[in-house]
Length: 323
Image (cartoon, rainbow, N blue to C red; front, side):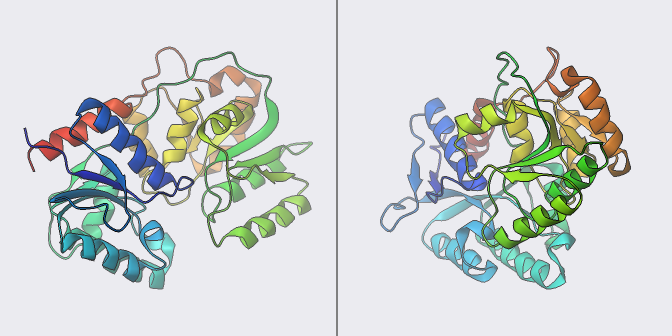
């Protein structure tokens, strides 16, 4: 079995994709002592093969620069890459075109390409000019915390970075339909560049009688503790390629209300009993049902949350062994 590639991360502790790179890399090293996780700094990447976790929003100030950074690495080493945040129509026509061109360049530079869902693989297929072999290795979920349940706060909560389309606006509208309105909490901070949009949504929420709060960045332990206190955990992305936020809810032992789409239907089949799928028009009713039956928002004993981190890391090691 060949040795794993050098496992690269960018040293961005608040970014979900870099958290993913670090956690999978560390788990792979725990399984195979030949695996090494390194931060991408000058002089650190002296290896014949590298594995990267790529989103253009992490690897450069714009899509072209991000793709160029990967191409520079690929000019010196063989590259394996996991793609995140696949371009899609919700980016807007101009942004999608720039991002799609960058992702095509990264795919062309890489020898091994991985997506985290079949949904993402379909998004990638639609971007490529020629067919490409793409592996699917699902994002890991932590084994759920089944500690005692705290007294819930009367709120809807959306977990992860705030940005338009993440589901916070849908949470505000659902919360406003109650008398008195529910509170809404964004567990996390705004994605860079979206601070003013959070303030605009906060003002809109206030006009609807809804108190919208944001916690700011929380480390892993604080995030899980805060996730356990929400009355109704909500996942309502309008456009998503894969969701680490969903897996964070599961790690907290929660069974969130999830607005259905192709990706979440795939995840519900992969992890039975871990979410309550509802159509967008049924969100208000699902929130009311969750308030009436708080136990429905917690994972039951039969919920299946695999693959866990070690299983995902083992799947990567198996893929690299044949590279």
